[in-house]
Amino acid sequence: MSGWEHKLAGLHVWLAQVDGTLAGFTAFDDAGHIEFLFTAPALARQGVATHLYQQVRRSVGARELSTEASLVALPFFLREGFVVVQEQQVMRAGVLLRRFAMRHSPPEAACNNPPVDGLPQR
Image (cartoon, rainbow, N blue to C red; front, side, top):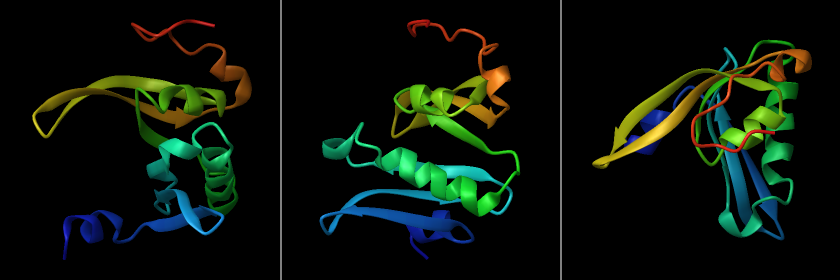
């Protein structure tokens, strides 16, 4: 089994297309953990991630959601009501990356999200 097949085994995968071109994808498990949420760079900020996220939300229902968001994805998940549980550092291909363990919370809890170093505050 290839690396991607192994990562995706047991996950639900949704694809988004725009004019027959892959625009993005998401993969999540039965427990509500979003493993991947990706939008093609050329289609960023055009609603692709929002559409995919809404599909995940409908699929898992009222269950709590969780993810590890990249620095780029962090603002999206914050807007969707996720809160940062823990900032993490992971090594990928010799590069140290920041990511954020997050969980979905009620909208009123999102305003109590602690600031993240190096990011502009609202």
